[in-house]
Length: 135
Image (cartoon, rainbow, N blue to C red; front, top):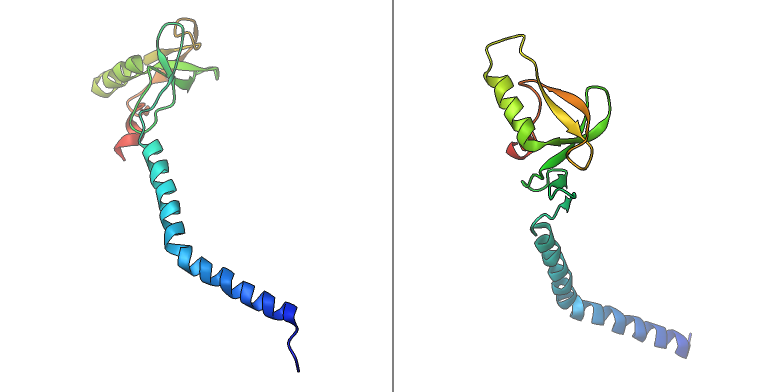
């Protein structure tokens, strides 16, 4: 039984491709490792938030960084933004009060940080903007 010349060419070509793959494997691994390293550098880059007309940053807390305004839902269900400094102050008051009837609240604003669209009741159990970073 004779082997056709095309079959020999395919077998030799296949061996060359497989051999080249083994020879280049360490180099290809280095290329993939470098691309993964550059991704981790991007993840460690400083967080840049959008800024409203008043110069306040807004968005969600990311990588331990907190903007001036974070998204919140008012007691009436309106979505807006609360100023983190106001939220922190009211949370501290709620945690330190001995008056069980005390009510603490923060304004919920539009993106401008000025127009009030509602109010958010704050208790000692209300999560803060930085709470997720401490776990």
